[in-house]
Length: 212
Image 1 (tube, rainbow, N blue to C red):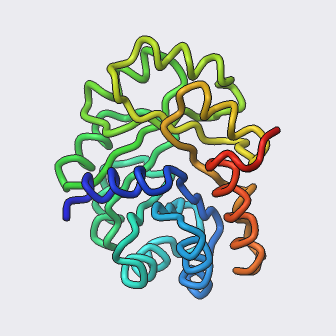
Image 2 (cartoon, one colour):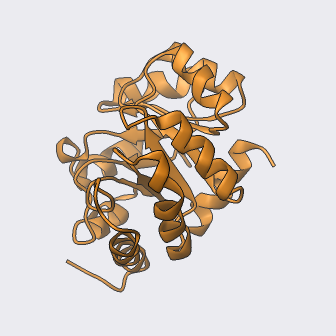
C-alpha cells in the first residue's frame, strides 16, 4: 500500500494526527500503543524530539497499519533522513517547495504548514497532499471556512495548534478535514494511561459526543 493510500484510509478512519513532540525512543511504542488502541492511525514525531529517528523507526515497526511520520521537517536532507527511518509522512511548520517535492519524490505524504491563501496555493502547486493550517490560534474557524471556499474541492485542511476537545467541533463545522493535536494529547512525562484517556476524549469529541 502506498503512503498516500494509507493516509486516505487513516483519514477516513479517524482524521486526527497525534503530534508526539518530546517523546523518547524508550517510551514511543507504549505511547503509540495507547493512541492506536484509541483509534489514532496517524502518528507524528517532530524532529526536535529526543533522538526522533529512533522513535520513528520503533513506531514504524510496531504499528505497520499506522501512518508514521516526522514533524518539523525543514530541509530536503531531513526528508531523506526520516524516509530512511521508515517515515511515510513529512510535516512542516512552513511551506518550502523543495521539501514538498523531495517528500513527494520519495513517495511520502507531504503536509506543509501554511497561514495564508497565497501560501496554501503555493503548497498545492508544489505537490502537497494536504495543508497544515498553523498556528491554528491565528486561524479561527471562520478563516478555515473562508479558505475552504476558495481552495480546490477536497483539499485536506488540518488546523494545528491549541486544539482541544472543546474547540474541536468549531473547526470541524467550519470544514476542517481533520486536526493535528499536540500538547493537549501528549506531553513529555505523561503515562500511556493518561495519553489513552486524553485520546479517548478527542475521539469522542470528533464523533460529536462532547460539545463546547
